[in-house]
Image 1 (tube, rainbow, N blue to C red):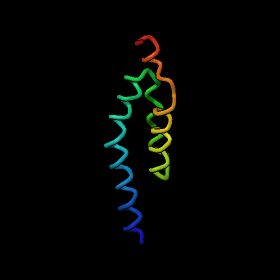
Image 2: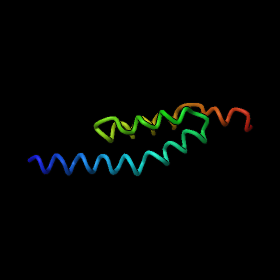
Image 3: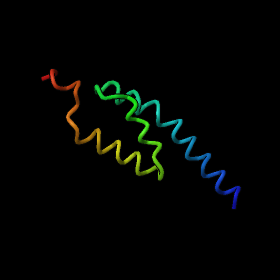
Image 4: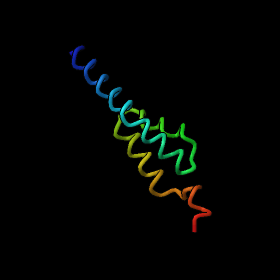
Length: 68
């Protein structure tokens, strides 16, 4: 049982390491504070990614205000 938990924690850490840099860059390019990308680490993992997707999908992007 302990081995299973260690493997699962390892998978979550690996997924966070792989997803954090691109999401950090997206937040930075969109004009948001890149530290918000740390929300993706919120357990359970899928909830954090969902929150980030909803935040980016429905929030008015600061970088697009002067683009029109």
